[in-house]
Length: 61
Image (cartoon, rainbow, N blue to C red; front, side):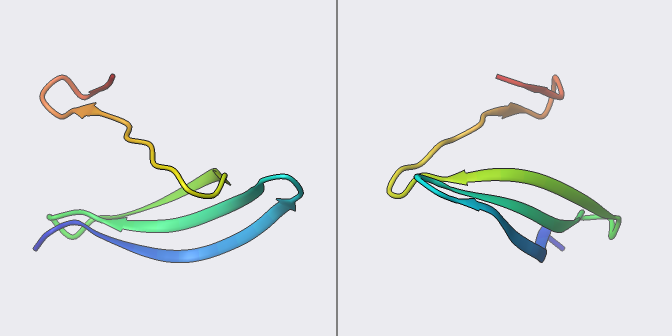
């Protein structure tokens, strides 16, 4: 089984110049463990961002 993300809630906190969302989602790991995450996300229109993660060092770049 691969990791799976399930969207639980998407609440708009602000809809001014940019849109600010409060996202709640469940991450189901390969071993079946479910971890709930909450994040605040800015939607700034067209664009992309990548956050690199080193799994061996368990660290973000």
